[in-house]
Amino acid sequence: MQTSDNSVNFQELIDQKNQGFDPKNPPAQELIDSCVHCGFCLSTCPSYRVIGKEMDSPRGRIYLMNAINKGEAVLDETTSQHFDTCLGCLACVSTCPSGVQYDQLIAAVRPQVERNQPRSFKDKIIRFLIFNLFPYPVRLKLFLPFLWLYQILGLQTLVRKSGILKMLFPRLAAMESILPKITLNSLFKNYADVIPSQTEKRYRVGVVLGCVQRLFFSPVNEATVRVLTANGCEVVIPKTQGCCAALPAHQGQEKQAQSLARQMIDSFAETEVDYIIINAAGCGHTLKEYHHILADDPEYKDKAKEFVAKVRDAQEFLAAVGLTADLSPITETELTLVYQDACHLLHGQKISVQPRQLLQKIPNINLKEPIDAALCCGSAGVYNMLQPDTADELGQQKVRNLLNTGAAVIASPNPGCSLQIKKHLQLQGKDTPVIHPIELLDYAIRGLKIS
Image (cartoon, rainbow, N blue to C red; front, side, top):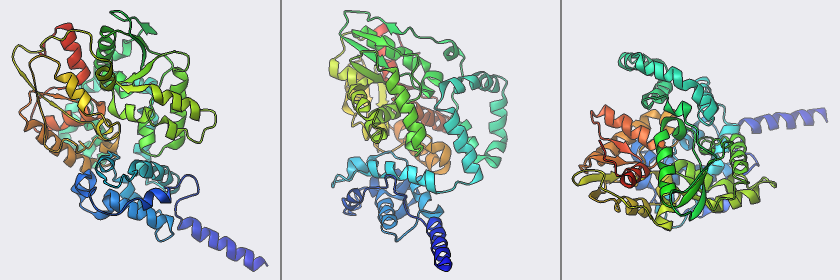
């Protein structure tokens, strides 16, 4: 009897070492089976286009999910790296003729990898920094003065020219490479709880400030508030709001994402707003996924559905309700402009026409379309920090395609995309301005010119 027990325990150890997905929300077999392996996704998948391996495509990853589900493969370092190379851009979802819900499949796999696959020491360090810093604006705010000094004292120039950071800590160097110019204005920016409409009130809306957006792109939030109030909106900004949960949600940090989602829901619970407005594409997609993130939470699942029903991207909202403010030209002559589709706006939220419609309402705008407009720029949340080589190749392609339009200005609706594009513009020796579409509307409403 003792021998039998020992035998069973030994087998359990083997099973634990060579395990598949654990019982907690594995990728659903019916979703896996909906893939007919046609290959339409391959040409639109950025990781496949760069890496060139079947297992680094949506179809290949679905093969792996199926094999792991059926015990024909294990979730180990080899298989998990193919899931890690996925940008989560969702281009394959837009392309798939069979309607495969790859977004739900990869969202189920990410937490499985995080729970069951040990990370290397260096990987743990960079992930610790990312997930304990970026989703917490108060913590991130503490670093701003040091980053400001790092730049104005010339240390950034010295570090980049020496190449020592890239040689010793390539992922940390990737993080540093997208650091924007730091100003201290956002440290002292405080919004009123309620900002009245500049005209007759049509709507009462809440605004999500974001994390990176509020600290590194605070002018975008200021412009958003001005555009909304100029178009008949009373704006509510709860002080208790934190991170939208996009970064942890995209990387399988399940508990952290759920905690941040609950906080966001609670912060808007008593505001009595008609809509909840977000001006960052990645954040907006996650806000609209709260009913999935909190599906197993009996206390919050219904609250999440009510919250999601109110969420609107700023451009989606303005296009739907219509602009009431007059728009003036933002340049003396015709402005050639290119709009950059952010993946989580285009593929995740199916928003593409609305931003273009709004931009074309500005007088003297000549809107151009780039080649491969639907291809990811390589930012993908924190992908450009975790998979810098693939991200860099995608960033180079994106910037070349945008510049080839001859545009004088690039309109980008997501902070991560903007940082990635600015990095590769600089590497290619270009100083083309990258501006959020809502800022361009703000210029037009206030009668300002782009300098």
